[in-house]
View 1: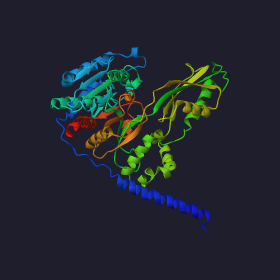
View 2: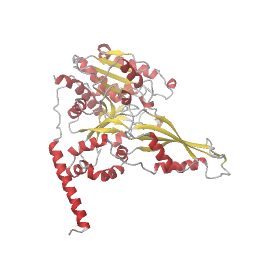
View 3: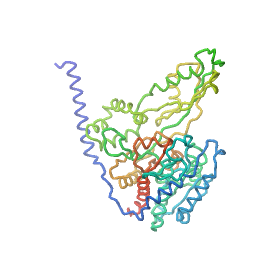
View 4: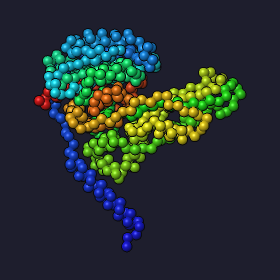
Length: 489
């Protein structure tokens, strides 16, 4: 008779054998798609000239404010004049649509009306550069050095915008006629999640009854070192984005002079609450988006890693544990909370009567703000601290992967970045793409550029830059994406 330990060992061995056989079967039945052959691209733009155009575009400080009336329109209008002069074919051969505000929207009519149109997106606006004195080069100037365009917005997202303009101008110069109709939209207020840019453009399309085969906005990149154990770069294409909410926490106590404090003060109580929030982690789970991503990576990963990724039914706790040890991967499996703003007294010798802080919440798909609100309340455990939801963005849907749309984007990625593994991905940040989910079941978020963690950290930070090589890759990607329809006749 087997003893209990032997029964357990036997069961574990049986499960491991099942997982082993299953891994071999899945990888055998799903041979990874190889590199797509490169087709000739007509008149690929000059990289150095394109870099100059990007540097010139960066020099316009197109900064937006949450209160739209505070936004200076002149830098936008100056940028529009520059783009009209720099890309004459785009502005004479494409129809420019009036969607209001400071938006730029174009239509390039295709030859086959049976095909649904596609939509390319980027945004004109940028975040401020309040630390300009600490930059290597002034953030709003014409700076090209050592193979990079430096400046605020060079990566986010004027690099993408200029790459699209360059691709369009080159294809028009070569006399290319697309099969499907293409729309191009550059909103004016993505950085403040406003209602004057993409919201108005999407409303315009909605009222005219236009739906899209797919929508492609900024988003994931061709990431190096994305997952330990996989040496090849991974092209992460966002098919949904996490929810975004702000919860204000407040404590009110007696104030007074700092020489005779009655501790704990409102700020001290609030500080303890902040520590309890940030020292905790919400429950981890694998969403449908991340599950598809892990399956895709499991088809390409070395066998030991594939053994884990393709058998989540057995190894999910271990995978979640590994993800939790890395901030980037942790954000893919958890709703997260972090305090981004706090305020107490306005003077060093005054005890604040009231202290408040803002908790920014990023929610997994299908998780409610109420659930995280309750989690925060349980973490704080202090009735002296009140809570209020002050902002709660519209929730993202998960885009479909069936049909040709995701396959077409993946093919363009493999053609442009031969070593990359395209995979669906959950965006942890927000994009304009959210506004267009009502117009297409296939809304994707991808920035065609090779990036590592160091480069990504420059976004919204000091010394933001975009390499000339990445600008060239982005131009090649958009030209490939637009022309590949014609090659499939």
